[in-house]
Length: 318
Image (cartoon, rainbow, N blue to C red; front, side, top):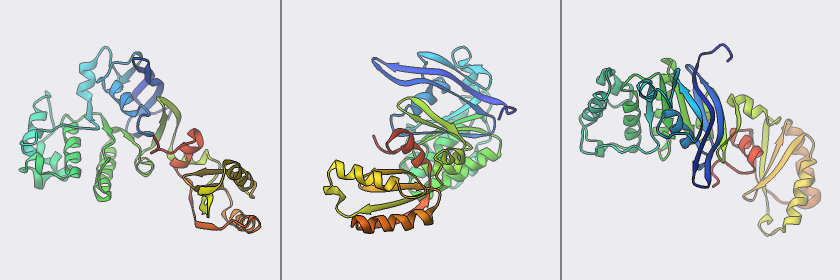
């Protein structure tokens, strides 16, 4: 990474709203041609951080540089080299698809040809449809098309798949990966761990306005020091007192090869490097303690687990 060209530098970004500090000194660099993910729950500061880098919000402290241009001094230049898909995009419902793309293209000195752009976004068949008649996924693809009309070097996608069905999400994933193949630098915010894992070269985990980890997805998961997880319920735990739950967690934490034992939403999770050894000992422990194990399953560790390990709560918890 040290030899790669830096396209974005965020240095000490801070944003305050009265007594509330939404972003608390965020630092990171984004390299040319990578998909860089901002991952965290709602309210983590992802959108505010992106808007400061885009020049849509002025930071109270710190600065951002995009493609060599400081957002405080060269905002006009910054706007020429970026494309932005906002979390919520208001479009002119009565315009046809090709009309609204043509209108956005007129805002720039130079723009890409409209028909190939619509083809890339899988919207060519909808070019004469009015915006109000598009599906949610089609509107999101149109929003991305509008972000690409000036052929930007850096593309910002703010939670582009929120509210979409699985097929529409996958379609947008394919579009993002094709943009990467064309050498575009992409900053993507999301609270979907699977999306971040599939699309991003590196992930910046954010919580409460701060960066809590930054690395490649695989390295973040490896930081748990556990490759696998065992999930299960114990019958009747909803009626257990806190002391009994704490004792159960202590006993589960002593199971061979278990690195960490958690209990959340009536579900126990054991992180282990040796599934077979841990499973055998877990069954023996359950028998001795007269626990009735339910809904037992095993899986690989995920980015959600990393976030829980660092913050004590899940990505979708408020």
